Image (cartoon, rainbow, N blue to C red; front, side, top):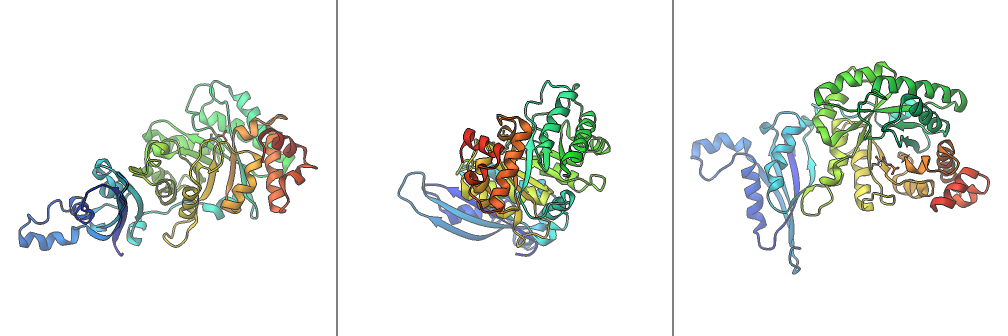
Length: 404
Ligand code: 1AE
């Protein structure tokens, strides 16, 4: 539908007339009252009026189980070209009005013109790393708080020596006197160079961008000035528009990884909130995330497999948006034994991401990284992990500890 956004809601109600409800949403979130308007005013207000696109009712005799999927379209005319305006229009006050969940959102091509999306996307990140034909491997700093620069530098070096492609800060590492971002980046990028001389591999370091909103741009520039070649950002605690401002900034020429912190307060209920594929898929991509982390179906913090597949589709699908694709990063509790499942479910355009699954390796952090690179190699060679592990000690140790 041109020049209109279409929001789809799932609405649970035992008795409601869903068609009436849909009309109420379409009118209530746009012109307010319709029938009370004089005829002349109606003509001028018609262009602002929301319209019901469809109502599909799912009847059930079970109490609390009757629901409907309702699609309503909203004129672009009503909103400025930014995500706060779009989200407040389609699900502002409505998000608090009973058992209703926003399950999908389509914006118009004209609205999308205000967005450039991910600056690098999958192709750009692969070019930066010079890796085309395999899943990428990311490792997460663990145990960062209260440590000084030499300790973090050594932890970085060990991760890099393990052969990972990307190292990201833990999302709970904020500005602090022991490891301020610019000094941390300098120390870690020195370690990256040391490791590159040994491994011959390029590496991205996603430094965590934190602090008050108005200081983020300066902080990003300081980190980049110090050598940061990627950034990590806790998007949902700031809002999509902040990610959009950062990703759209001509002076910030590094990929941005979106962390899903707080997402669990928004998507898991079937009755309320915003569906995960929209929250962590479509909207992250539109706002400019080059990589998006989310729980995997099999680790320690999990999400149903269908939802992770829908997030993947939202990040990769070229049919609903012209902005670049974002790399899916199914995360939390990932260990080498899960690599075959990850590649089965996500293909090779995926980042295998682990913290504990790397640092917790009995032979140390570098061995933990190697166990993952061996697991990835086994999958690419279509060899069973256990067979591959017979001649790869680090993988063997990981499988003994965590299974497959
Ligand atoms: C879904 C986010 C995962 C994350 O941020 C994180 O730190 C995971 O760590 P591990 O791999 O579970 O130790």
